[in-house]
Length: 298
Length: 306
Image (cartoon, each protein chain N blue to C red):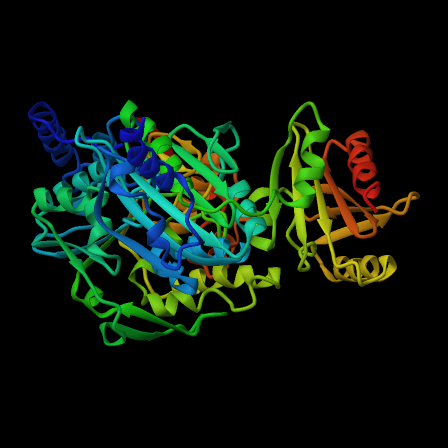
């Protein structure tokens, strides 16, 4: 037993996640952890707005969620397989989760790695703490698909566990048997990329959760609780009225029915501190479930 | 995904190229029957490209003997569906050479590593064309006043660009997180100074949704001072989410599109994944600049099988 102790000790220390990396490239896996996969060329790193140099126009959306730094690298297998890895360090776990929820595919399957993982046809997204890890297979070899998972696990092991799923998501995700696609929104780009709601005027520095069902879409926006319900609602009405491409009417229940110039209709309901939007089939039953779950928290 | 050219494919493509040259000789095609945009669908991207160009009059319509050709392909990232397919690039080089081009150059401010990892550098080298990587120094880019610019008043175009006779624009069409769509119009940012491109993104875009459209206006403005002679668009395997970089959901229309009207081409391309061109601001604003036609009924678009 004694002769195994040093090996067990080494294995033990390899598995302990280290502190948050000052250099993000430190999070790339140790060569021994991902053999026979090897780093190909030099990793590319980018702090802050330098992200534009790495991913051009794609940088805006990442920055919208609250971005710190990133590293991109390519790995290759002796049998010819290749894959890309991108690691994004975000401002906090909510930012990282938000970006993860946006990037994972609509038909992804859960994969057990990090705090949450989503496996798609040829790519894998992982959320852990303040980090998003995206791995992309560049070919359709079986070993590449295995490599995605191997590298995901190796990188995840080096990231400290921190934070929890965003509050809104944790509250609403378990409510429905028919699981909606959930996307956390922190800005107008995320909103325009993931929803059918017109961006104007609904983005006003808040956090939103989009629940996409097969026939409807419900968005819950959370605003600052320091403003009164009447004030926020009035501001939104003023914005809508100013927008020439929107028409609206107030319903008997106090909600607003809004139509954009393309004929898309949605309903807006305000119950402090949340604003609810429904598009598609006006499923008031689902909306009631959400409202009761959230209002029960206050 | 990329594939290497084996001997059998080489012989087949040589035969296709020869056939295209005969059919496309000047005077043989009827101008009235020539479509404005040719869309060719097929699994062989090389063959589809040859046919698409042949159907709009052949490469000799655009490339004269001894002309210097500059090509703008997309090597942004090697994720599937995010870059111009090497076989489409190969077909274009071959057609240009067949038409008598003296030089065929690919200009780029992207790192050489991008061209390497996408396989495009290998293809360009195999076909004996040239990849020229430009630095990002200001003096390499010529200031160009945009008289019709609404948001952008000055572009900074690659100085080297002006040394060529023919410009072929070769984007891949795909999703874009910034403005939902990218195609021939947005690809032209590739010959504009990267530092100038950054000004297309307004500082307050994160809090002012109106600012998102500033990007679209700048792209439309940029297109008023550059006019490609020919656009050949990769719509074979494209990402329709998480663009422009990917990874994202992949759509495989297996189409190559050739034409000269950027607005019409982009208006067609965005419909491949269900977008309405009238809701894509870049297309609408470019149409307002009279760069091209947004109404498909006013454009002769013909679809072919490879």
